[in-house]
Image (cartoon, rainbow, N blue to C red; front, side):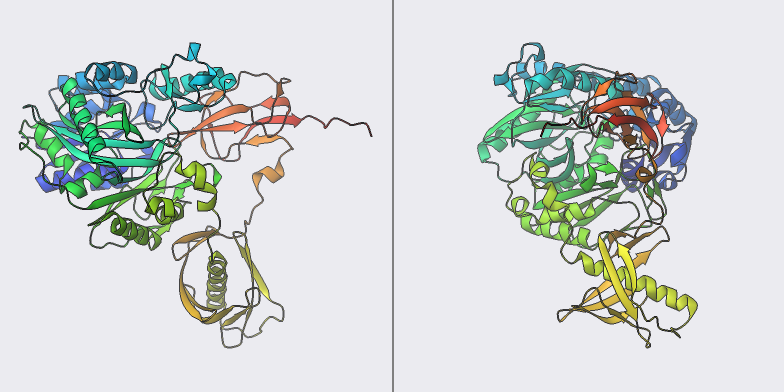
Length: 632
């Protein structure tokens, strides 16, 4: 019997495993890098061991240090979580060699499935349906579009969609470089890219006594940069025959590698056909939707299987529908750029069928080194429509104060007609992102409330209005300018928005009558130039100039803090084209390209691989080519 578990991970998944361990009477041990010294997963553990350093390569990816930490803390088992070393066969072997219990599949199964190319060969032998591979060296226009994928990777790293044969060599080089940087293995393979395909997966659970469960399907088609954003179980709109094919193929895949524990077999679904993509030999981020539908605790089953317990002959019957949304600190309107800063509030209304798995709490700081996911919010209800409605409502009413997040995008996605009707595929955001990130109707009245709340706070600090200004006062929040005038009774009139009448005002709450409907706006300000109105984030007019306004034309600035992972093979004086990538930055497990804004000459290149840069740092300078004169 396991008595103490070290979780070789951080944030939300570590907290998730700790919760089950507490329910089972098992003590817990956390590991933490220096930026995580005060993190939530450290606070929730019974004991914690420091991994000196900041970068994942010197902390959470150091299997030797984690095994030492487990032994030092008296743990007798290790749970890998997801990400980091969760699919490292070498780490699994190191845990076992140290005499510890590995709460995961056999290292050989991990090793076999770690290479997507080897996995596909094994699946073909097991009769699992596959897409035919394409050799990039001999690819023709008839093979397009192609999807390049890292053989040793996951999470969207090293993936490229190629639609132009001339772009194939460059994209292949870029995918190889990213794969080598992210996974230490630059092997990349190509396969047909299926337009409007769906990402459907099957949760499997297997014991060491020959029993394998297929725990239904999940649809994970709503993705950005090949990373999942919204997931649900069961996958909607699948026929009985296709569902049976998915279940049978997933069980065959697990048996083919002698799998034990929890794992996921992922498929690409096009029409009524399914094709094997890969097997994730770990717990998935989206496992809670399966837990909700089947009434199971998958982490508890992982632990029991690691202790040698058998599964019952068959799983419980599923019930209802579950939908999960991943709340990220990122800006969908600006290329999904990850965001950093203090989380001032993170409060999701709780209710029947709602579950929140969070890795952060109020007061925690989102840094640059790790994944930007704040929490997962899950709704379970008798029908899909009800689950979607409950989840959208909970997100809409959540207090998420601090960095920019994808919360508004999630709400709009869940309420989009295509999603409501189950018309979903991996191209959903390519088609709808512009509309989903456009200014929300009525946002201008949130700006009015923010301005009046700030003015009310000032009047409270300085006493009642004795001399009412003769001219309107003004404030700007986001794209909205608000003009208002204080009245002698301590209220305000709004001159920029004649349809808004002030009903009540205080620094924390403003009530406005807009065309006969009274609406209350809850306002929170934290002194950083940002206010949150009914949970929605509005930036005040900046007190400081944009760094881009203080630099020479053609200066390329870091759009976010991060690490330079690659620079273009160029020298000063070389000609560059508009949109040509010059510097690759990695921040929060995502890679971002900094490109030339216009054709011209590279006059300076300050970035170098391995450099840590802050937002606004000068990376390169491109002197724009003068426009050619034309004869009149």
